[in-house]
Length: 331
Ligand code: NAD
Image 1 (spheres, rainbow, N blue to C red):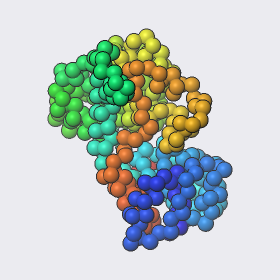
Image 2 (cartoon, rainbow, N blue to C red; image 1 turned 135 degrees about the vertical axis):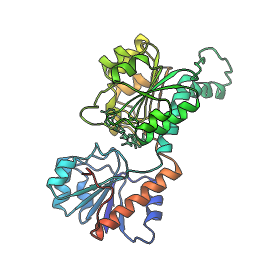
Image 3 (spheres, rainbow, N blue to C red; image 1 turned 90 degrees about the vertical axis):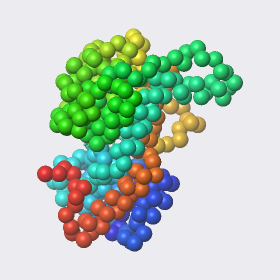
Image 4 (spheres, protein in one colour; image 1 turned 180 degrees about the vertical axis):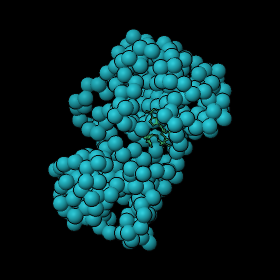
């Protein structure tokens, strides 16, 4: 099936091409992000394959539908960048990758937590410059601390399991509590209670209207003073301006983020030779107790391999007219 692959980086091209061996789809790799201006590049393609910062809104979907696109396959779990309602109305099916190494993201969240708590990135920069001073690098033991997990699905549960291994006390919040979290010794509670008692809060719920800015000014006023916030889920869960105020006041003791609400214009590109116009991200990275990475939590050999295989399987299933097991939304 003719498939336009937007936001295609070197690793997308090689690993999707590898997954496509045997399936034989005609892949048109495009480095551009999908937008109203670039939708025309998918002309003649029945399938369009996208990533998290592609814009797949109603306008783009209408343009794609008019060009004959019938399937949108996102190389991600989250699908908040796709107007699924508009796709349905236009007769375009949407598939995602529901299952790919949740370990990749959970392990990275732990890495971010350690990095910000123990100032690992800062220490590394120092030693490269011949500075072996310890002043300013003190962290806290995670053992015995309370870790709040918002969203105890696949990733949140693995994160919780790892933190249990550190000897942390677990508290959680989820619309659908799971016994697996309680089996780890985790206690469910409402968000307000969780924020008030956690030394670390890690976000693992999807971005929906109801979860947008779930950590905003009000929530940040409730957190235990000095709390470390980790976000590997979606940028829109955190009101970044409010987080900056909380960092300035000391209410937040640290912030570790792999996702950022305005990441679409920044992430997955080398902007090191340009002037960054986003003052918020510039302010964020200036804090010594903040670590920002560019949406790389999923980026392991295992996860990418699985994402590409599932994407190709979905395109093949669509072509054969079979049921799409990774279709969104599921009934
Ligand atoms: P999942 O569906 O297995 O788990 C999500 C959990 O959030 C579910 O248990 C669900 O009930 C819960 N939830 C839904 N609404 C909630 C609410 N209002 N409050 C609290 N909990 C709520 O998904 P997952 O595979 O664990 O992925 C979680 C998120 O991680 C994804 O939505 C995605 O945004 C993000 N993610 C990020 C990366 C990355 O590279 N940074 C990669 C993959 C996924």
